[in-house]
Image 1: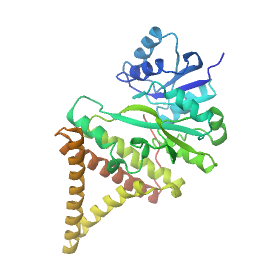
Image 2 (image 1 turned 135 degrees about the vertical axis):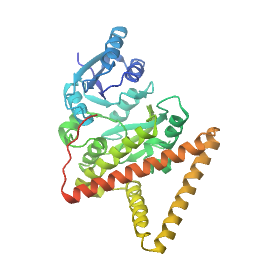
Image 3 (image 1 turned 120 degrees about the horizontal axis):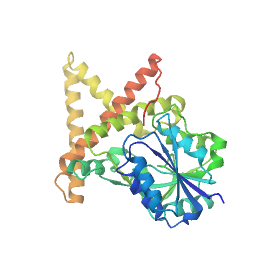
Length: 339
């Protein structure tokens, strides 16, 4: 008898966290006999496969299957997992996430109640490592100044939204709107949800559907992540310019303003004053956030760490967006490679 729910997980070199994700799925309140897990692995080179094998031996009550993702991109992994899935409902997760015990149950309920064609929840952001900087990064990527109106990172109100992290949807939806766009390295979820909305469907955010998500542990890793986000967001907006939101426009506009003012300041003294006002105002805003988080968390390291992380997110995302936009204008085409 085929399972009703297929949990799909794109994966590559996740030996540190894949076991946590699978353990949490084995502890779901939803009946395990009605559920399967399909891991689309990009031919991991660490101990990921060994961790999955060991888990399967210890938890025979949960069906776990592994499919190869030779393209090694996230959208390709998702499409491969969906193709292999036997359930009528798809629940999408990541290898570095830990879903709450009722995650699958609540996701299925949301779909069956007709709340939306894609139903998702909110993230509780956890540090990627046990370091002070990792703690600050986790706080930064959950703060509105860092992520704008991305409500799935902090809201406690159910609502119709533009996109959700992960999400649950019926497999027939893929037949209606198509699978995940494999020409995008990131933003594949947002693009998929855009097609759902353009087809008249709804994306529903339920804060009762919760998962823990590990943030990047270092500023360097955070910069790379947000560079990818910004770069591929511009490529996605090339197709759907009407989906641009203020939170997505502000970082590239800010970076362009800073760079433009810095360049003009070489010849125009007035531009130096403008640049100075912008930099000081931005620094004060970052400091205010650092103080706010420091007071709420009662840890001194947030005073410097959170502003640094937020600043890194803004400049990486905004700079990558502008670079990608420059490439689009010049007609450069980019092929996605690697997870």
